[in-house]
Length: 340
Image (cartoon, rainbow, N blue to C red; front, side):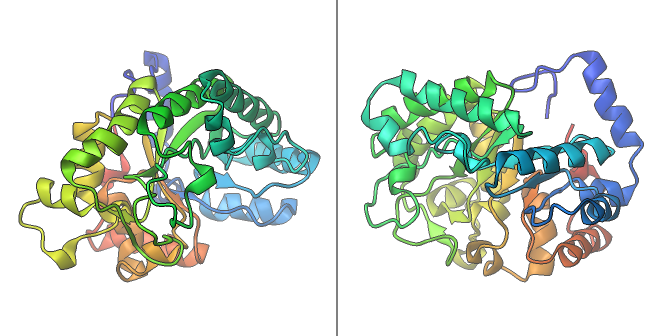
């Protein structure tokens, strides 16, 4: 990861701060920074205990009353040794974090205008209102393609079935949200919307050929990476054609969802598409992740495979223990904790 290059563009003094901070951290702190748990509490005593015991790198709360959400986010930032990534599903507007925030429109509604200015305004409103209550990270835009009308996840959350329109609207959203100081996370790589499975309940499969993927999802992701999207969220989605193309000796039983697939994270996303930003798993409580392999292996394996942050926990103490055990038994190396 080159911190001077897109999408970070850090100066020498910024990079020195990163290095100094990393050097000051012990193993426990470095492990804690891998986690972005789901925020379930607002009691300050409990929040302080979480910060002291785990030092997470991020957190995400579901929408609540803006004043309360803002106060919780402020307390967390004021008391965390390292600034937190504070995320929200800002897919349809500021209502993704504040219950009284602006509902601008579902992505398919916005795409129906066929006007990129509407995509930009969605990102702008999401960024302004998210930032106002302390968010600095949007789990949006959804850049899945609505190829299969039976898919239970995509549909109106997407910009539709036309890859060109998905790219145009997605780029406009990224521009709008990031201009307002909130990092975009384009999702769900390598692309939902092809089959009719729900990755919350089962590993889903993007069954496109290499050529078809390149002309659709690949075109969309490459365009958004070039636009400067700062993070990518990885789905519990297999892409068998590319896994086999990049790892010709891979056996069928070795095919993994992208969250656990080095060839898709490194060979495709990093090397072929040129992504230099941060990679976060989708929620690791989904069955699409938990059924892939034993959890004590999957937790550290997701980072070893190429992810930078682990989203949500079935049980925070247990997952934290599994991550440390992964370092002790060699699944995850210290070098993989240092991404630049």
